[in-house]
Amino acid sequence: MEDDLQNKTSVYLRIPKTGSTSVCRKIKPYQEILYNARDKYLGKTRYKCGNLAAATRDVLGDDLFNKMFKFSFVRNPWDRAISSWKYISLRKRQENFKDFCKDLLFRENCGNFHSWHTTEQWIHLYDVNTNKLIVDFVGRLENFQEDFNVVCDKIGIQRKKIPRKNSTTHKHYTEYYDDETHQLVAEKYAKDIEHFGYKFGE
Image 1 (cartoon, rainbow, N blue to C red):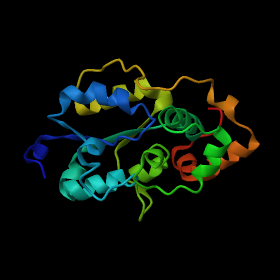
Image 2 (cartoon, rainbow, N blue to C red):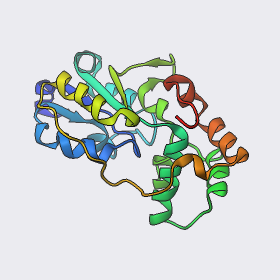
Image 3 (cartoon, helix red, strand yellow):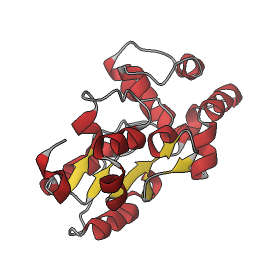
């Protein structure tokens, strides 16, 4: 464990395609008090693509983990699926959206580029054994600035304007779906929809 961990008061649990690049850029000057869980330990623990909060708790220990303010951001699963598909297609092989959605159901949450960007969000933030949320604040990309202001206030830094970085450009996500792809994404991300209260079109 790093020597300066006792000085850190907050933990950012970084989920891909939820504004994470923007958040990381804004919190970078505060690394003396803020612990970026994914960047620190993605390659140093048995953590692969899921259970980020639980893996961080294992690394930090219960006492320190429980003292820290733990935050993350989530995104509407149907919107996130489009963003992930666009992002992966730019960097890997091109795949039509329907095939991408079908593929989602057969991919495990394992350590590779594709799976990292499509893993269910709840897995990062809940204890999968108890089904309990183990972070203190879950912001929404749909309320990005407002919820990031809450984070700034909680960790005691000046509020900052947070533009979207590393985002993909596309039509409104609802325009990409038909009945089949809507249902495939709903099935894949059923627990995200349940835990975070998302609906299609919102």
